[in-house]
Image 1 (cartoon, one colour):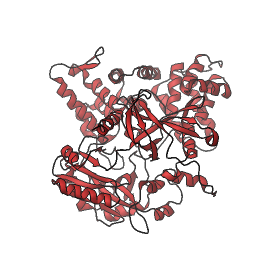
Image 2: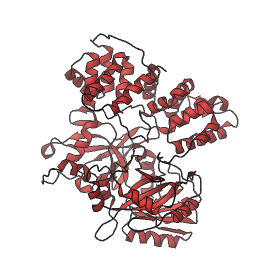
Image 3: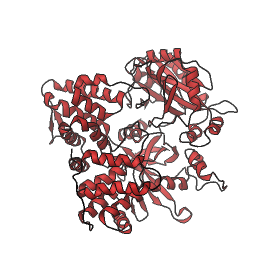
Length: 604
């Protein structure tokens, strides 16, 4: 496949705001794509080079990319930087400069999808002496052979900032359209932006979407799903397996107003469990091997090395995947610690044993995804919990099944809820006993009940350079939620809840300490945020700064109000930062529909 075809698709997607039109455009390309290139194409459309479960990262900074553009176009780095400040987009800068480049191309080759894929993948593994120059050469080689449009998206891909507004839902539906659209008689009515089906095929379409989604749920790889359908047909999806060592997305839960609302949502009898203020873990065990993943699917086994022994000693299973919450324990009074404390351990690279002694964790096991090679995602929750009770050798302070009550009595449920609050916990989870495990979805199989208004997890997309005593720091951060089409929509600004500066004491480990402490409320300073956000700057306009969406923060607020000033149509009254949420992926930030739901709830 020529890379130019993908670049043209990217351009179409970038200029098309409507999800159905995006889906159609993707489906038309998928139909023509060979099975051997299907996985690569889907990765490119997701804006990644490595599968989501891979620990490899491209890891190339904008300054290095700038030097590669200079090499390929014959311009100076200063010229390119000035141009970049005007466009706010290095991809667009590359496109415009390639269109009028001075340097004659000595060798021109037709770029293929695989060539671009291979060169960008090599960026992650190029290390050692001279690695910077080799990385520049790898990028420049592609740009030298690229058309201006190809160059634009090559650069954006290298920087992992694709900007085409395509989410997993659109990609999943495009796969269904590509492989089953003809037999379903599926036609997109572009004037009314709705799907038309042949008689009786609407139900079949919904069933196919469900099957493709299930294939994605257990493989966590849309490319593998598409390739399987291309080469083996629908029956081939049965060959996809939930694999120990390969993490999948965790199931998410929506908020209920109170216990009565919770029972109404999940049905009775229901399982009620403590809602721990901890760190979500997906623990994989196979024989003597134990791997630990975050909800973002990052491998943090090394940072929580002591958990391996706990799992081996207390989990009676040859092979198992557990969904858990790791809760910090105060070594003095044995009480639970808030998330901010344990979060210091998530990305710890040094003195791991010391941190484990300072902030030990208790593993609270609340769900089970597989057991001795059997996929349990479609088994009732009551059965999954029954196995947990059998295989976990409980030891408080080390590992326990989540504290649970099964009841149909609202009074008993309310009593359990208040007991959780007295214990210093966030609230409770209320779960359907018959529910399956649905990765990544808030489907009403379980809800959370908390006494406070639901905080929002929002991504920072802009800020302003401070003045006066805050000069040199980024301040007044613009926050965004996400709509169904994957667009980030502003919903307000926050400048409250930050410390002015770090404590004055200076130690040799100052930088490492800041890295460790950055997730605690006390250490989220303007200086810390500036250091986190500066590498993500995409554009500056006077004091105003714009960022690649990556840094997520949890925000409390007094009220949600309607507002024409922000893209979402809503604004937060008196927002304040609570903590950084680098344990959460962008796909889990607060959605526009949730903001709308919370707005309506507060009016009742």
